[in-house]
Image (cartoon, rainbow, N blue to C red; front, side):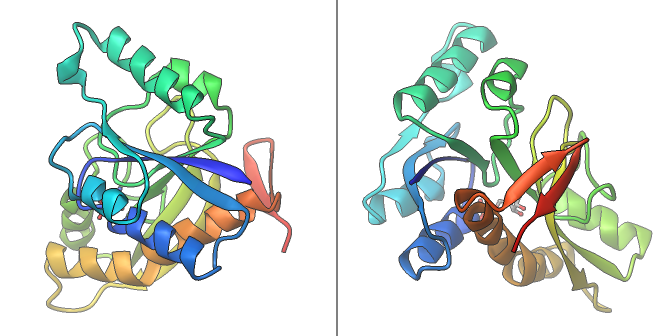
Length: 208
Ligand code: GRF
């Protein structure tokens, strides 16, 4: 049974997609052990509570230094016996000490087709503003392993989504979530939980 630690900062719709997929059998062999938010008011914590999953806030504001915050986050993940860390709308940079503790065991959902519209400064609505500003016709979402960079780790799954005329960033964000994020993040977790994902030379191979 793969123990998941889901890190969140906001509404938690991706967390909800994971919880629902476990309930309906689209994810097997995995369990959400703990939900951790840097934001005490994150609705994602409410979603965890409603689902009977332990949800806690670990915020940099609670600690005297970034180092202490990082250590507290890592020790919580290890105390909970987490096997796979899932960044589901988590807006805090993951420090190298945690990346090193979980090599190819941290995944992130990003709301574009990496390597487009990603990296420092591209998060949330800003991604979709960039997409609309450039006038691309296809966007989508990416699940990737987290390495020391920002949105630079090995790509696990991607799903394309059409950009439509008249889209606003909000409309496009919703379509990318509904048609891509909420599908590929649970699927990636199910593949990893069932040992169907390997990484060779920075490339991901999936065995169906
Ligand atoms: C989503 O757009 C996700 O792609 C990005 O942050 C947003 C989080 O949404 N990483 P939610 O908290 O999962 O609803």
